[in-house]
Length: 219
Image 1 (cartoon, one colour):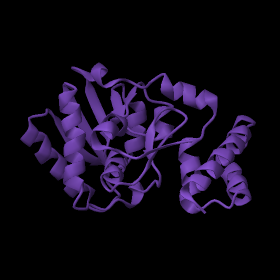
Image 2 (image 1 turned 90 degrees about the horizontal axis):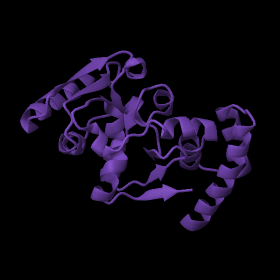
Image 3 (image 1 turned 135 degrees about the vertical axis):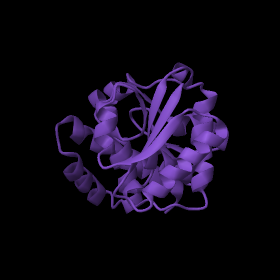
Image 4 (image 1 turned 180 degrees about the horizontal axis):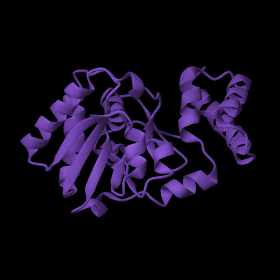
């Protein structure tokens, strides 16, 4: 089956899934029903799970989406593994999905299984460089402490912050999602649960996509 045909299938499946979500069906049960009907692969199901949402949810998130120029002199708190995963996927040439809420996400949610690679430092450099060019006053990068080698990556982040002359810090925490939700600062993440509750956010991958020549899927 060709890639174009699968994209057509995904578009049909998206229409059905969105209808069920708007009718109040639970996301996981609705996705299983639609995924089984269209015989979707794990990756295709992940695309739908991460990209399709109700119009109410999408509207709430879109209303909080800031442009890069709005970050000047602001503090930004970065969801470390979430953003790193997406940028590393971009560097590997993997396609990203432009979701209903206007946020760019990687296809497979893997940040709970994150492992440092030869791309980690490069991805961090892209993230920190973008925020420095935006003129942010300060950044804080949070990493889930329960993920292996999170302390090591936080240390690398602190060194890179110092090297590029950007004021900020990086640390590990047990409840990163909760800290981001409760923060009054601008956050950098693509996690929809956080985006629905935070004050405002910046989509770092979307601002790097054209620069890095990312492959973007739109359903």
